[in-house]
Image (cartoon, rainbow, N blue to C red; front, top):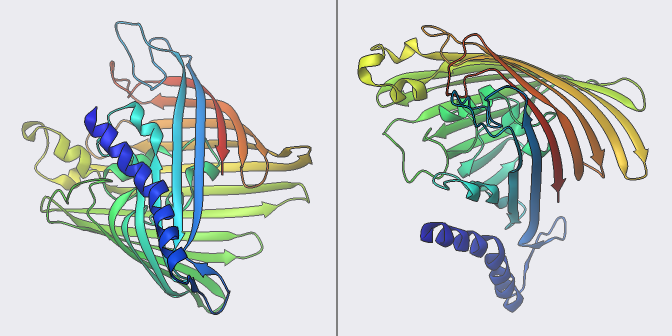
Amino acid sequence: MPMKKTLLLRIVFVLFLMPLFSNAQTAQSQPATDSEDGIKYPTYQFKGLLQARYLESFEDNVDVLGMQHSAGNATQSSFDIKRMRVGVNTKLSKETEVVILVNLAEFKTDTKGKVLENAYGKYTFNKYIALTGGQFRPAFGIEELVPADIIKSFDFSNQYYEFGKNGWTSFQIGASASGAFDIGKIPVNYAFSVLNGNGKNAEMDKDNGKQFSSRWVFQLSKKHDINLGLNGGFGKVFKEDVFAIGADITSDFKLTDKWSFDLQVEYKQGTNHNLYFSLPVASRTGDVADYQMRGIYFLPNLRYVVNYNKLTAIEFSCRYERFDPNYKIDSNVRQTYTPMAGLEFGKAYTGRIELGFQIDRFDRNIPDTTTYNNNLFLIQLQLRL
């Protein structure tokens, strides 16, 4: 408990007191002014996100977190706070920014390795290259570049979280170089990252190995915003060679003035070294390459612009995902269907109400684990600033 209080006090200090202190300092000296845009630096932009949910499991003896209870007594309905994020983006100059993001909802469980999400600095030389260092989400797929508050479903995919456990996605500590240029008439975005690969808020790297990854995005059509993404990575974990690859495509078609349709398709495959090293030595093979994960998902989204009173738009989506955490030697495919309807209020999802289902089907159920068939009903309220 004392450690939680100390961590909370530090977060409050960074988010709220530091900007005030910086303002006090700049009040004593003349603020820097960018000669081109006339903006006085530093500038601060505060952000927040609340995602509150009601959950109900319709599968016997399976709780709202997906855990099966052979003895019964599963919690099958509950209110929950998924995210309560507070963040600040500080522009020290036109080229330099510092970003801090915390998720206060993580205080509901053990906070070790949680709470602090983004904590990085970025320096942009020009459109061709920018350098980022600290804790951030490295570019390795569609979802890594999409904030949780504007994703077209309730949450990220299963493969996103599994590849995060293996150090390729989600919040990681390291450094990155990114930028954009044109190949003929094709706009290209790129990113190169080098990461510790053991998640967020780790005191130090778990070994001396590093994970290197790259992402390339080619805009094939500007009219329909069709983009092709290619991802690849390699590295060493406890002296073992690991890899990850992926490909994805996004598109956005404007059907009429009010109707639009966008689609995301993403495939990933890689070494599941997190699973390998979690197993007792006697129960695993001698080669980490035997443990590989792969997955693919399709996320179509249909949007109708209403603009009636406070209601901005109505959206309908249904993500289908097929993911196997260990397809080579112990396959157990998880298929997830996530139909959802959403009401948007205000601009850019300022307010959002979503309802739908998360339907999980496994090739093989394992009692008393989350590897078990489930039908989960969700209502989610989202507010952002």
